[in-house]
Length: 199
Image (cartoon, rainbow, N blue to C red; front, side):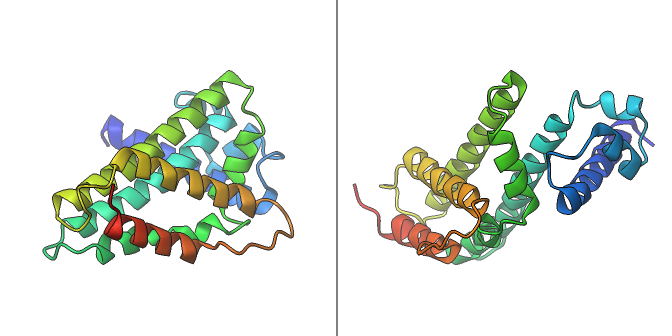
């Protein structure tokens, strides 16, 4: 087995074990020993790739974002160039934005509570930047394919979508909140802003 394949297998085991533990215990009570036991990886194998459980948690956030990007990219590479197909791939993840039990929402809420830790602050900054970059790229892709008007400012619109999605995620961790703006409204807002926007 090649070194890169072994690395990806190790990271996959780490992520799978960590997500299982988050579903069972939440983020705060998980220890590196829990992750070692669940993943069946040695301390050396884990610390060869990461420095802390918070770094693994950040990987969980990035993994979800990259999965969404892969689905979007695959849809845009299909023969028919439409707005609805790629939007549907992004919208598939929107329901999770409201789910207080979603692993990535739990991770985000946990890491936001630790933002004074420089490593966590840096990981959150990278996550925000990657999310904004993907959002901008998705809009620019739609513009190249002629399904989103060129008058849409991809940078500003992408950042707006990130802000709203983060707000939905944070709201999901507040118990008992009754909300009028849902993920389905977010999808409708995206559709409306991207297809009818004028400067």
